[in-house]
Image (cartoon, rainbow, N blue to C red; front, side):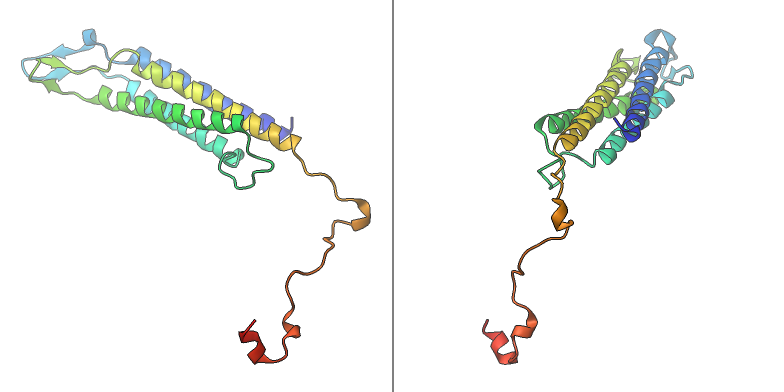
Length: 196
């Protein structure tokens, strides 16, 4: 395993663990029903850092996914099928992106809704984020990070196993062969070129 591989694992692993930790911290600091004071037609919410923690967790999840996609060179999207595509890498890559998108949506939605200070006239209640939304987003951020690293591992392992065979020494790495197309000097008469 090269230094670049270790660096990718450390950076993406740190981003995934930090995003999950921030998601769980946002769950712990979210506003609960017992924290809200109500007046006749308004809700008074206490200040909390849950929304900021949720936004940062979503951002770290996105950065981790973009990093995995960049260093794996989007392993499932390359046209060179001989050395980069493996079904396992594609599966891990897709699961990683699906988990991260759902996790980011949960984190951003919960962060947006935790700042909403709205009185629901129809029910006479104040809105709060349901338990487990921040934690679910943080958990999915960690799952996305793990599957992304598995995808990267599968791409790099498959790439190492399918390194092309070395060119024999007597050819010196120069392509030996005959040209496929006739050169322009073969056509001496310009009118002949029209009918070829």
